[in-house]
Image (cartoon, helix red, strand yellow):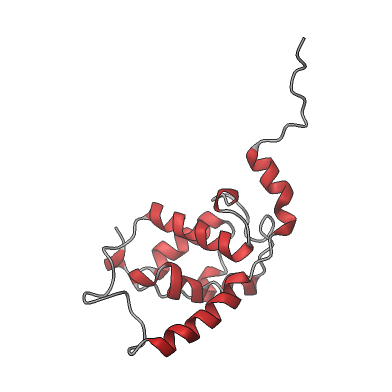
Length: 148
């Protein structure tokens, strides 16, 4: 007779939350600083959103959420599948206010550069969850003309 699964079997989300002690925000700050220096040295003009026409076709709310999760995953060293929109930046992902403010550069120069995002660190720091951060980026950093 087969044994029934016991309560030691955790859901994916519970396993992820258990392993959150490893989240160390700030990885992107180190990468972005050196990458932006390289890009500035290689670029004849000071950046922009690509060739010819400037920004891309824009970004939707759901695409903003995907990009935000990708950015947070890269910044904390966690996998994309380990980031949830209801994760608390401070409690679940170990962000401090200065870590959240430091996301300004990756937002503007890497994850949302194609839509000419202009992130205000003081607005970013008001985010409580990953979903809040995504909403702030979409509504406050991405220009209205680039919102789809």
